[in-house]
Every structure is written in C-alpha cells, then in structure tokens.
Length: 344
Image (cartoon, rainbow, N blue to C red; front, side, top):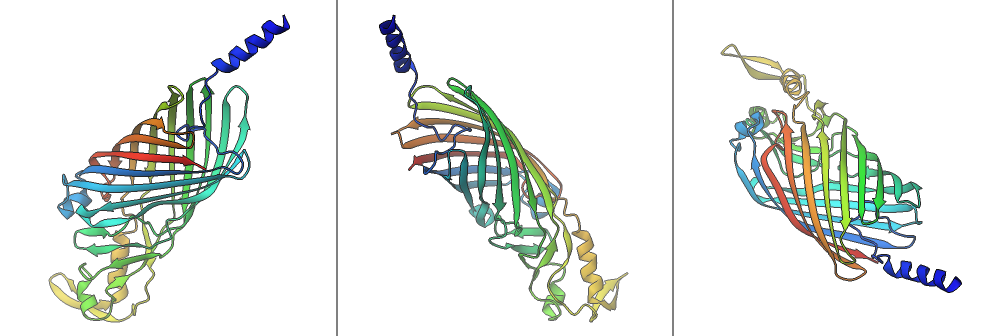
C-alpha cells in the first residue's frame, strides 16, 4: 500500500507541468532578490482623424508612418510579495516632427492576498514622471504643435489588480487612477501666433510658459493568458484609457501687463493694456477641449528560449474618441512589435 501511494505521488509530480516563471503572465511577480527586464521595440501606423484641431492644421486624414515606439520595464523583488518597478516609453514620429518620452513610472506593487487555488490581489502606486522634461511646442494661428510627448506635469498612479489562475489559463482585471498636478513646466513658442506683433514690438518674449490645470485620468482593463506548454504561451487584453481635457489657468511668464499696445477694434486701432489681450487668449484656452478616450485591443504570442529568456511578438489596435481640440484622435492606429523578456 505504501509503495503504491509513493508511486502515485511520484507520477503526479512527473505529470504536473514544470513551467518556468512567465513574464507575460499578468499575475507574474518576481521572487525576493530576483530582477527582470522587458524590452519592447514597436512600429506604429496612424491615420489622423478629422477633429477641428486636425482640420485647422490641414492634417486630417494624414498618414503617419513609421512611428517608432520603445518600452523598457524593470522590476525587482524586495520580498516574495513586494516588487519595485520602473516603466519608461519613448516615441519618435518624423511625420509630425514629434519625439520624446511618452511614459515614465517608478513605484511599488504589493501582493495583498494570494490563495493556494490561484487567486491573487495586487495593489500598487507609482510616481508619474511627466515633469522630467517640460511640455514643449509652438502656438500658432492653427493651434498648438507639439514637439514632444510630455505634459510637463508630475503626478502619481494608484491602482489595483485582481486575477486567478486555472491550470494553464490566467485572467486578471485592473483599475488605476492618474492624478497630475498643474504647474508651469512648459515652453511655448508664440512667435507665429496672433501675439506675434507684440513679440516683434518687444513687449512679449518669443517663448512663454503658462499655468496648466491639474487633471484626473483613469485606466481599466482585462488581461488573459494561456500557457500552451513549457515553451509557448499566448495572451490577449483590452484596455480603456481616459485622458482628461487640459486647461490654462493663467500666464506664468512675467510681462508688463499695464503697458498700452495697439489693438484692432471695429476696424480701428486703439491702445489697450497688454493684460487685456493676454487675458482674452487665456479665456480661449481655459478649457482646451483636447481630451480623448482610447479602447485598446492587444494580442501576443511568446516563446521561452531558455528558463531566463523569452521572446514575444505583440500587436495592438486602438479605437479612440477624441474631443474637437485633440490632436491625438485617429481613424487608424495599429502597432506591431517584438519584446524580449529576461529574468536575472
């Protein structure tokens, strides 16, 4: 009887799949002292939509390709249930001469609850690094042209994820909030705007900064994962991202607002305080109506080269709904890329 029991236990151990820890699994967390890297290189294709902002710029329906996208995710297991992580993303788009860091996050994730039957609950928080570089661009007669992807604001994410593993299949849901804090970390060229005459007169600098409002945004989604065997796995997901309207609270650059300058009123030129003109522009930009929502569908297939190295092919397609002032709306937005995952 004892021999039979021992044999049954041995067979059950041999029959159980001995998969290496898979970094594509949404519930993956590094063990204490372990470190991982996820490096992605993607190529994006976009066709701009017909928002008012795009029509004014003459860019509605325009194609942007190739857009290069780079991502780097790093993580370290402080304990088996506490992880420190960093996420950085960079985009380069020659068609609109726009490039820079589009994502920067550094924070902690804690596994608050885990059961033997595969259920897990994570909570996390991180610093939003949008203030590492200032928002930069030029404001002209046709609106704002961005030079980079930074909003110039610092902030934080707070989120939670719950999921469960059934043998080879894992599913997880997440929700997170992004709070940014308004500041004047921006550089805006106005030398070709309606304020250009006052730049030429020397009463306004050719570059200004404005006080931007704080924003509250959120993301939510579903991730699924299936381990086919000890080498192959596949994943799919859906993510919703809400991007809030930006707004200007006032001019941060110091000017001589009481100085009288010429201004056209009813076909005649009259002298008015410079503050009057600047305030009228600030009112126009108080709500920039540039928010947008994204609905992202993602698929991936992965192959485990070794216990420590994995290669994934991924694809994303994004549907979006942009406000009239947004320059981020698209008719087509697709990305295909390769990701290399390494565990140390």
